[in-house]
Length: 217
Image (cartoon, rainbow, N blue to C red):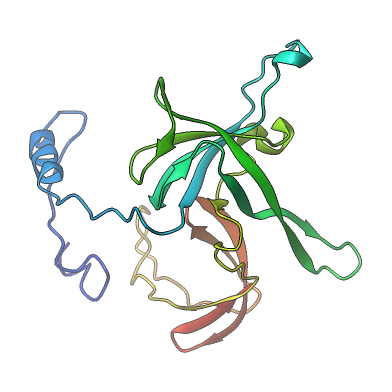
C-alpha cells in the first residue's frame, strides 16, 4: 500500500488497518485523531464560509407573520460572522443562455438574522465547527440544499468566480474497487469529469490536454 501511494499527496501518511464491523483498531484511530494539532484560527480576516447544507425551516401552512428567511449551514474557515452583518453569497444565481450557451452568475446580497450552533443561539460565530446562518433571503433559494458549494462572506471581499480552470493532475496506475485489474485511461478532450470543489461536486468538460496539464470548463 505504501508503494501504491508513492508520488501522491498521501505519500508518507500513516496507515492504520481497521475493521469497523469488528471494531478492530477503532481506538487507535481515535487516539491518532486526538493527537492532530489544533489548527491556528484567523479571527481578523473577512469571514469566509463554505455552505454544506441549506434549507427552508418554515413548516407547510405557516402563518405569513411567522415566516423566516432561508438558512445555510456550514463551516467558517476564517474571520468572524455576526448577527446583523451584511453578507454576499457567491456565485449566487447561475444561469446558462439557451442561445449562446454562455454561463453567467449574479451575486446574492443579504443580512444575517441569526446564528446557531446545535441548540445554542449565538451573537457571533468563529472558525471551526458547524454553524447555521439565518438570512433575509427567500426560503425558496435555500430549499433542498440548493446553496451547497456556495461561499458566504462580506461584499467586496469575496473570491473570484472562474468558468475555466487549469489543473495539474496525476492519474492512478489502476482502477480501485474493481475485480478486474484495469489500467486507467489517459484524459481525452471533450471528456466529462466529476470535479470536487469545496463542498460540492459538478461535471467539468476537458477542453485541452497537454502532458500532465488540462484545461477544464
